Length: 174
Image 1 (tube, rainbow, N blue to C red):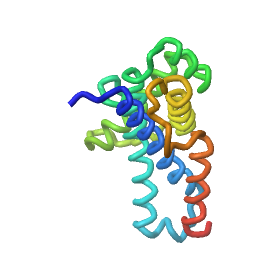
Image 2: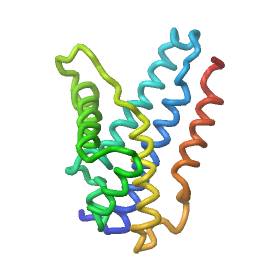
Image 3: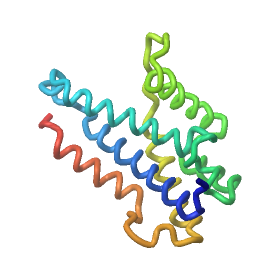
Image 4: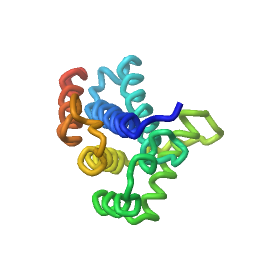
């Protein structure tokens, strides 16, 4: 079944939000309390937030074959890429290297457990910044079909901060 433009925009935006929410919940425990480091529930929950965020980020920004890849929703692809790179402060080569890092984490440790002995978690600042930028770009520059007339947050940053605060309130006291 082929998606309409409206469906594609909404789904891509929702994946961006899902990525941001999971990144916020992961980052909410940047300084975990020693007591909960001994409890597998909290360790597993936190790590699952990271894993989900990486999977979702790759869907929208790291895999051109993915159904929600930005190239399938953005009409001015060169213009978007130029603005995205300026926003995140990376060259195109550096961004491609970042994509490779995220995909390596996804492919070698999430989708499969390959032979690597060391897992490197990519910097999450770029993921937060780029997912937020894509989300707001879709809302402000691609919404030619009223895909976002109801029930979507107007600000990716405010959305991220909301769930960062919620996560900090729920994690056990540091």
